[in-house]
Image (tube, rainbow, N blue to C red; front, top):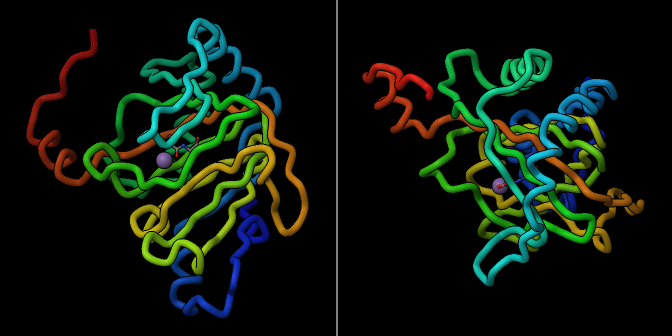
Length: 217
Ligand code: OGA
Ligand code: MN
């Protein structure tokens, strides 16, 4: 179920129809992407190791405030199936993936400031499942950050995908509790864990296909 109702364009007259069309086709939210049981299973697999970490306060140049994070390569077979579904839904068929999955645990009082994921580490698509809490992800055009804004409502257990201009020409951020509103309605923001999959940057993908795969451990 892809609901275009989960995207809200601010200031619609400032947008060209082409841009609206590009954002709507490349940036998507799928509600109820994981079931409650799948959410619990994913949560259980990441919670133990997250709990050993303190929440980090951001430094002046960092994008994220009050978070802890990990990377994980191997998963229980049930969770691996969910991740395969994430990739099948969000990436084109021939994509070279990062082998690890990024787990970001955002404190109830935390937020993610506007940023664009580095093209050195991340390819054309960023996709993630939201666990434990709903939130609002805001995209702002890099060069018109107060005019071209689109909000994505990410319900708990939904999948989002950022691609195209949404990935390269717009910053993304996750609003903090006090700012969290979608379509003039409050969105209550608790602790949120996101399970994020990325693909390899194009250059690296080319490089890696020429090499033998490196055996793990
Ligand atoms: C990031 C990021 C979004 C999310 O880690 O770069 O933007 O869904 N995360 O947590
Ligand atoms: Mn990001």
